[in-house]
Length: 166
Image (cartoon, rainbow, N blue to C red):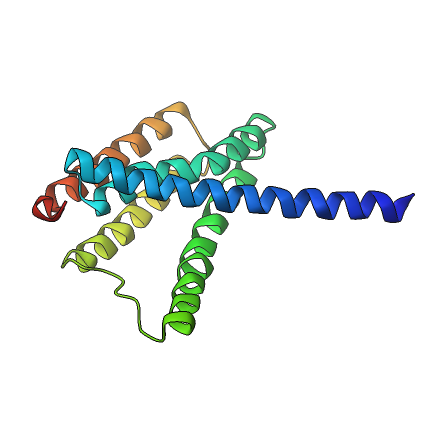
């Protein structure tokens, strides 16, 4: 019946959410262990490996909708996901930590936050400018430009990371 099917779907959804939570916990734990073992700062592990690992679902969904000619949906999904990450994914765990431990969370341990925010804004302007320059149409050349921008972002991030605190 409809009620039984709905109950199964809710149970499956809860089970999948718990699996995502467990896998996310271990992904972060393993990134910390590997970073400490190899002498890679946690900021670099987060920027490179955790960011890539958590972006795989966005990549897959964007590929699927782009193959169906829905480029606007692919871009909107990516933007929406990142806004959600910043405005919900960051403050929610901080708030919970603060409520449980009764102390604030140190968000950034280094002095590179202004540079990171500046790079984020510059990349946003560069991406919008690139898309506008190509008449809001996605070409293969735009992918190369965006890969190059990501390489610049990674290069600057690696160059400015505090490698002494790994």
